[in-house]
Image (cartoon, rainbow, N blue to C red):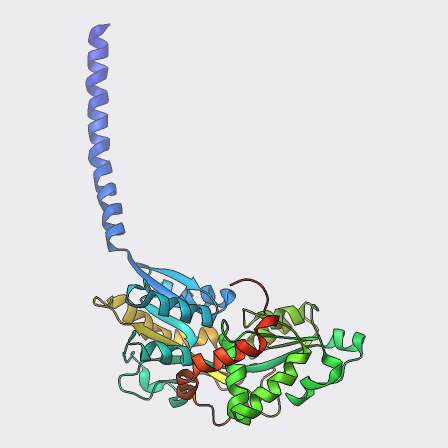
Length: 354
């Protein structure tokens, strides 16, 4: 009996040894794969529903690069980066207002970089320096989201312009985003300033404030809340409204006849002692045909021309609808002063949180 167990014991040891020899290569392979996995931290203000759709082609092309996304509204992303300074974990900023990236550049946080294919980018959607501090992927613009069902039920008049929003019927019916936390709010405010001049723009916003029910922290929230019928009117931006309309909301997306404020959703390389090569690969990809094709149905103005038509609902010539003398550098240089003045006048109606 003991001889049988000895023979079985030897056989079991042999099997175990063979299994170990077989297992070691698999273990080493997993460890090697883990070692090869690169991580890239990307700060973005793109909407949550856009991020995975846009990133699909990058993940397919570079499966060994793990993307860690940090997503928030433009103002919050900007404040976060400024607070973190040289200790930020961010490698790249993606799809965030160029006016904010100009603030980061002024603080010495941006490493200029010319991504591959830069010559294809529309001049108004990139920094003019060579190499550029920032490169855009699209432009986004002020839009008024009007719930037609609510308007009919409450007997509200039609809207074509900014001036229409001052009508007494709209008291308590309008929401917009706070420019201190939202890039969409900031472009709406600076758009009015570029359109009217600073003094008249604040006089206009004093009157508009009387009709405002609430200021949100998110640029897309006014569109979503108007679409849901919580308020009749949301001052938001084109994509946010079009997206809700595609989902069947009873809304009209109105681009004010005086002209829409606008900014560029742009990318930049964060300045670090050791810049990851993967960060530059990401910026190269971000203006490639694959990347721009993923967003072309969401935006009428893209950095690279990858189509002939314009998404449904936008003006046939979307550039003609924008405020003409929009100066992103001026907006960046005067950002803190404008935001402080806005907050002193209107912050009392801002929603709680953030």
